[in-house]
Image (cartoon, rainbow, N blue to C red; front, side, top):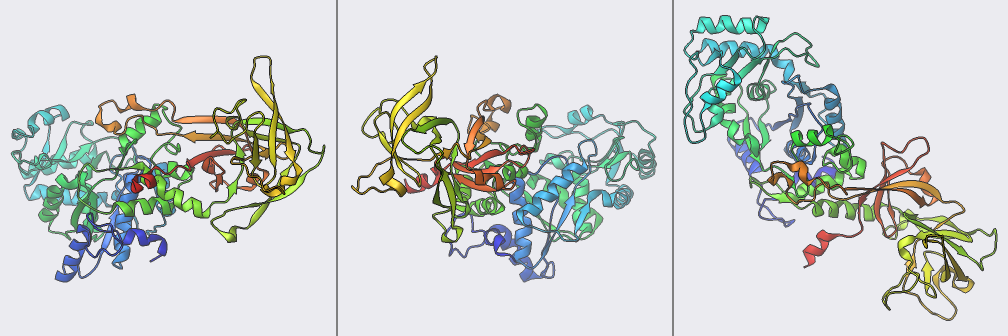
Length: 574
């Protein structure tokens, strides 16, 4: 087991986050009990079963880490299975993206790649078996009529008038369904369980529906398709899964999962459910994420504001940061828990602080002319790449008569004694180089400041002077001599409300200011060599990565991954 997965395979219990905690979470406790009793011959074989109808989000990352990580811990294996039972919404592009995300997280299904569609013939044969047992029937009710017959949470449903059909008639009708003799939606195959059950999933659930749609793997072979509930547990059984680990949305489906397997008398995995991962200021519903994409609130599934793994990756998040976040949350059955997104940002910030090289970037440039600096002179200065790591070494930065500083680092008149940036008559230090004093601000016809005239102290080279004076303010800068043009994207929460899912129309809470686009930025020339997806720290601005999508044809685009401010660390101290 790789050390990268250690945080996942050693998740603590929900009530004890100390490193020395010996209490195991409920899933590991179940597995230990099975190993002790010999139920599965000490085998742990899990699966991750996504539907290929969208991109994975961080909630899926939790399921991936649990299924792959726990199996790995117990010396077992994990299957990747696409539950591809709805061809109208599925596509190979989603399957490809899912596989890329799982590999990015550092997990490997090896040769164990399967599809529910691999088992369509077996599922059909098993459905025939249930008809012969008298526990499945062909129904003529429409979808609307079925909803009416189903009843309510407080009131029992009523049986379909077609429920009493003979086995022979059901077998004949079911074969005709398969052969395409009926129009879409005309008939369904339903399990015959209990219309008075307190669990709505047990009220004669649908097993097959007629749907003429081309499947991305089986083509037009089938004109009817199994429902998720019918395909899911049986696929687990075929693959000899021992522990079917799901989120809590499947808890009410477990009795149906067990009922189907018991009726077939086949290998029976243990389904266990854990709490879903919800994060404030975002949503983790694939249906709602699809709305954001299709209604152009975001620039695709991989938009850096999205909680999808491809979006997080494009924003500069690392597998380690994601897995550490999930590990800190632990495994529990608690419902409606919402994690603070600041904890996710804290983990990334900690990692990038140790690993990222520092660079100077001016996001809103203001030109500075150093009037007493020799014309045409270029000086080299050593700049430390990362003060947290001696191994990171240093680089050369080049200083000249004309430089750029941030517009926000200058005011004409200092507002108070605690203002340590540049103002007329005030002295500051330029990072790695000299002290400068502002003498004059040049304005355009509209009164906007377009240039500063400053003088430098040649005796202050490297940040110290013979007279020992010190200045409080240190500014980053970029020389006009070799500055590189760049576009920078700053991100805020995608939603203005902490819990956008609370309201029916979550789109009303989309933040119109979630993206700030800066097109006239100036950065150090060394950043031209940073590869797509590569990260660095922009001094005083935060951690940034090269956008893998928009950095093309010589254009460099940076996405801010996370700011320097760490609100989670401050909360822990308070």
